[in-house]
Every structure is written in C-alpha cells, then in structure tokens.
Image (cartoon, rainbow, N blue to C red; front, side, top):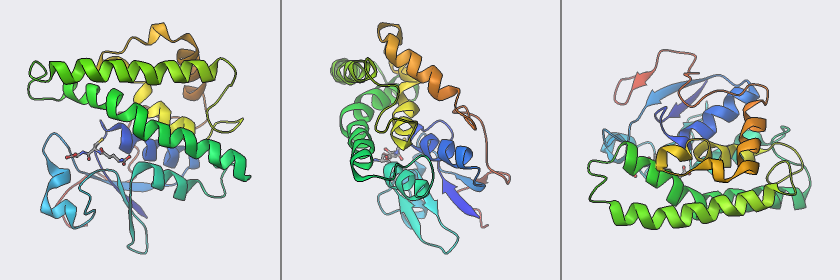
Length: 214
Ligand SMILES: N[C@@H](CCC(=O)N[C@@H](CS)C(=O)NCC(=O)O)C(=O)O
C-alpha cells in the first residue's frame, strides 16, 4: 500500500490526497506536521531530504516528494493527465504557475495568518504577498473567462494543484467574491466524482505518528 507523509491542513498534501481519492487508490498516512516542525526533523529528512511534505512512499520503498511530481506520477494513464503533448504542456504550465506565482503568496499568507507564531510581526510580508496573490487570482479569473478548466479541456491535475490553496484562500485574507469565475470553477471542481474535503481523513489505516514503526 502507498504511504503518504503529511498533515491534513496542508494544501500541498491535500493535492495528493484528492487525486488518490479520485483515482480510488488506497493509502495509509503518517502525520508529519509543520506546526510541530516535524518536516525538518532528522527522522523525516531520512525519508525526504528536502524536509517538506508531502512525500509518498511507493510499495517498492522508493520515495517521491514535491506535490506536482507526485500528481504527475500518479495521474499517468488516467483521465487526469491528457494524452497529447500540447495539453500535457498546458497542464504543466498551470502547475508551474501554481508553484511559482500562486502558492508562495496564497498558501504562505494562509500559513502566517492561521498557524504563524506572530502574524503582527509578519504584517509587511503578508501585505506584499497579498498583492502577488491577488495578481495570481486575477490571472486565473482571466483564464476562466474563456475556459472551463486549467490545462486541458477537462478536469486534470492542473485543476487539483490550483484547487488546493485557492479554495482556502479566504483563510489567507483573500476575498474570493471579487473573482466570480474562480468561484464558479471551485464549485465545478467540488462537484467532480470522488471529491474530498481538505480535512476529510482518507487513510485506510489509523493514522501513524512520525517515528512510530509501521
Ligand atoms: N514545492 C513543495 C512545497 C512543499 C511545502 O512547502 N510543504 C510545507 C507544508 S504545506 C512544508 O512541509 N513545510 C515545512 C517547512 O518548510 O518546514 C510541494 O509542492 O510539495
């Protein structure tokens, strides 16, 4: 069985959990929590030297990290990964956009406001991220003016990658009512078969803590 390292609150981990649910692939989860600083611990770095969740251990023991790489790997041969090079490139384009122009602002502001030790001390960073995060949402809004989905002409891992932190952007102080096409796309994504919520546990076994032996 696949073993997923990460915590429920993490949007990057949620991307993988959402795809696993939509592909109906069972997994067990080992809780590795950023708030407890566990991703940087030696125990976790032995699993993923980058020190970030998610990481996915395959049945043969190999470990894959980086949410986008995991989505790419799991989606092969499924309807979530298109079969022609142009559409594949479009999916990757939006996944790279998510990692460089979206997640660093929208996810980080959510983290600072929800889980940060002292959001007051981070006020300038939060304000700067708000500008960049809104630019990302405007880009998405413009794209969705003429398209139903990101990447391909159907729901794909590009939508999963962007859904993860966009649907909780309000927790980072972003007002999604200013982006009606984004809001409608979120509803379409939520209506896809097999959709799960961020905090919905899908581990088929009781959740392990890091350091417990399987
Ligand atoms: N580019 C990575 C980002 C992963 C990431 O930033 N994970 C966060 C949790 S959402 C983390 O583990 N942070 C721990 C830390 O930086 O100490 C991905 O997409 O998987």
